[in-house]
Image (tube, rainbow, N blue to C red; front, top):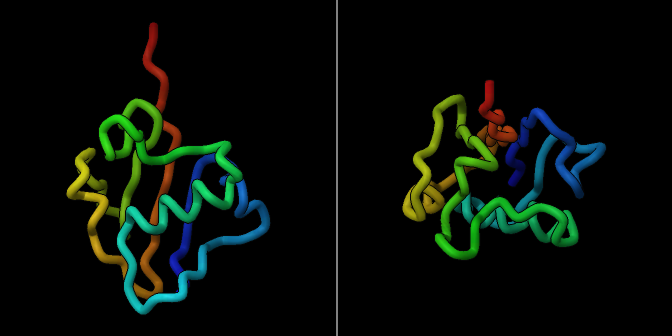
Length: 95
């Protein structure tokens, strides 16, 4: 199954690809983010180990145009063939 990945930065491990292929008919967002972390050879960790959730200070994530909440439970959303996961670097604040 292919999940399309869209980002505002080059995702390590997907430099020349527009998605990720998984060997299951359905996967969770957590599985996709963990696979992307593995493909980056540890350079990028999308899920913060101390909380088990995506750190909103680092990344903003959407599925099919809808933002996910920054909770462990939101990572259990099931994805299917053709879903689009958008991963963006969180904008830095300042003045």
